[in-house]
Length: 394
Ligand code: GLY
Image (cartoon, rainbow, N blue to C red):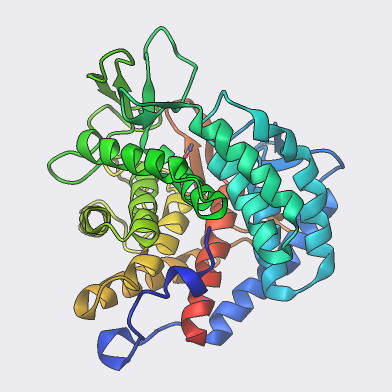
């Protein structure tokens, strides 16, 4: 969730040879201005005391997330980026009001999703306001997340559900929660958190990836021995397929881990994941993937959320490499952002229940949230635009 001022600081300056930026200030401003206007229409629709996640396809009514859902923090988190962009105080006010609903999750030791829930929200709030109360919430939350680490496995346990099927499931999505732990070590001075984070990233590197650099969704470990019991999927088409959002989480996660540790193994993994994704024969012309890379066809739903996460990650990755490779990541991210900002994916203001993007897929095999707006698609789309804005300002 880091702003690119820091995230790209390590990259060499952009220049004409290495990858001139193809999108303009006007493009980015137009889309961020539209996002502010659209989120004002969403604010109008969100009753007190709830956190939005999507709309009901049949009725168009708002669907909300419980505070303990992995999705719960994305609404205030998006508002915080939009506040950062616009400096409009009402957006900060609305975000801070919703943070109060999330705060209790700092003590939640039953989920690995605390990075999504707390770091994107309270982390951005702390960055933008400097309010030390937010730091204290975050440090408590990081301790809760760290409590799920098993040193024998070398991983943080993802889920507690499906105990009949899995003993110690770890999903590729969990790479995204490591940024929170890295932050906690920087701020507290206690290396415990980043040590856990690195061990988790190394274990994932060892067991989650196939020879073609695509990733399994769920690796189930034996918590007593650390042995791999199963390589499964939960949200993908089948155990051996490449679930589109899972690949995006891996790309973003290893790019972020390189930023935070400077360990080249993480950069190499991010590059390999990018190569897998960008060489996919099933990737549609517009760069927005089907919900799983193994499926295709005119009626197969896309996943705009996977595309938004990928664009944001590629923009960061482009700052870590040089020459043609940098250009390739920039062009791919620009292509995705152009498609997402077109009427095919970006809703007209006042439509789509107030959400920005259409056509995301939450959980296809679970027949849940298919071809809908999703709060996290909006978050990573706005993040990618903010990252691009930082690049234009360099
Ligand atoms: N982290 C859950 C998902 O991507 O659906």
